[in-house]
Image (cartoon, rainbow over all chains, first blue to last red; front, side, top):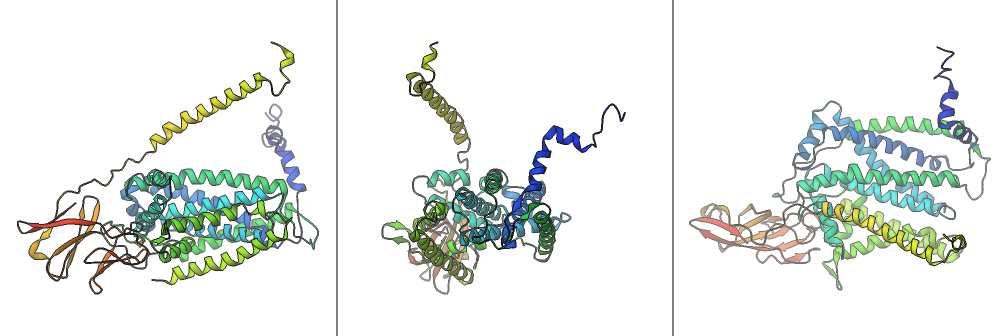
Length: 354
Length: 151
Ligand code: FES
């Protein structure tokens, strides 16, 4: 036998059939610029870990989750009856918050080190698109829970969508499945949350990674150290971080399990002190402060203008702040110094307001 | 087949092929987008023009200053007995972004917890907050000793 088939366990067998050898050799020769603040260089790796965790726990949740009228009951059942359901749901929930936090921190650090400049413009843009995906997943995930917060989050989100000129009603109908939040909405949110957005996220993350591989990690302006090999130095640090992050994640899920609010009842008044997830607090506070009309524009539409302006500015940042012009650098810094405290202040205000 | 035509990038044949490919591509996209768009159309019921008369409670059950919540069709409705014992019925859907308002007897108003809109309990008009218009008013009357609301 051994002579006729020279070994499925021979490492050459796989190499010959997949061409993985060349790939491994290249990975072995890869260098990472030295002197990078070590935590910043590993953000991407931890984000990938979280994406894997979200995919796995998401698939597990789908087994016991029911969209529509049974949503709340099924989430309550997962949380309190299914063995380890609380852990699966808790991990999924905590990882989602961490993912938003991580993407935000990563964008900020890339901004601070101007890593988005040529040739990494598209890396930045796919990163911003990834943030949008993660926020959309957070929003649709909140709605899937089926408690009171879910109902009113969905109501506000759909009415906001409807306030968009021209495309508003069409989009709101598409997402909500009807004029008001109902069974159709839950099912469509599931299609978005577990189908469309994960697929978009996967494609964007693949593009992002491809671009990072193409251009390498952005070296600091004045490298203070020699490049280090990706394998084994960088990879082993990354692996350690993965293990530590996984343990922390599960521990956090066990310590702060997410609750299920009261079942949504459309007849009941919106409960006092209801708030969206933390990453929507600035927008929430803005909506609370805006008057019904600003000149001839409705308040919600003013909020939309603000959101779209910020999004457009952030997305196109590498196109106008290309490091060639001093004024562009100043404008970018100025905008960051205005926007960040503003968002933080609005968020805190929204958090504490009653 | 004339070979000398082929390398000419602006020849009429190339233009024709480009136009044909573009047209075919657009047709392919449309033939996918149209059915998908139709498939995704909202299927839920709209809010009907007139809401059916709905029984609230017995006329004697509602004392001055008290309220009842009922559902009229798909709409949550707040029925109030004013202190002059007249009746009013407001749609509880906030005109801002669709949350559900709560009646506050102490300030005689309707308050939305989402972004803080406040409506007058007697007239339904906006007192403060981001709501653009007054609450929708429903018709209400007493029939054979029972309160009935509709629109
Ligand atoms: S939905 Fe009522 S104030 Fe915004």
